[in-house]
Length: 291
Image (cartoon, rainbow, N blue to C red; front, top):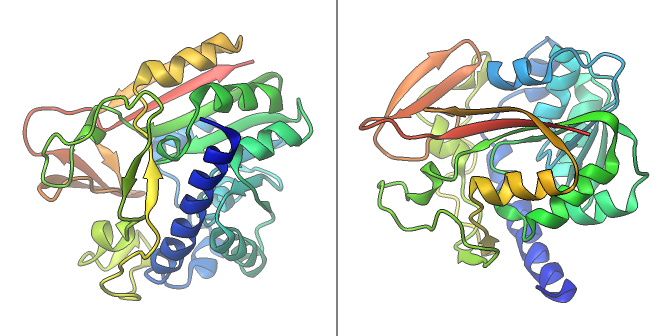
């Protein structure tokens, strides 16, 4: 894919995320108070993977609207982590949320590849990537090389992501997507309102973070372009950069996001998680790579 094609595709996704971000945050009431009072949007899985972040330089790539980034501060002791996202709306919201909650973080509006290839190399102890991030990127090789570049020697990538196996199915559990699209994009109607889809009717987005009706019947006017990346597509390029894998785990549930209409819901201290209502299906995985 040429640099021009990459720009056009990511630019279209930026516009789609700009619209969706407004809808998503319309459902979350008083987020600044929730975070200021010690609330967190992190689940136990990523808290255990990341551990204590006090004294470490941290970068959260594709940070969305900053809730998880600021939770790194409120729960794990991170000091002024850097959050990077392509969406103008997301970064504006995150910056204001940081100010209003009193939790310090630096938010940068940038496409991931551009940021990793132009920022100072060897600067982060931890690069964190979480939940629904990789499907928006057109090259795992370029992504892996960028992460290797910005990590300090001895630094680590912590990734928790929805599983390629589970993401082959639509919300009716019909097999409509490939396990791997081999770098070929497919067009979707646009980033949907997954917050309303997953949390409406529960009264809470997460414990103590109240659900607001907000924008109803959201229809994104900007189509999006996504990729399917299998596990080998992700693990192979990271290994080829010289990074070493120190952790790999698969999970038979999905934290917060409800991928199918019919699922078994479980309540955890951090919020809901969903399991397939039939045979076990992997719905998330986590990895740690060290430089």
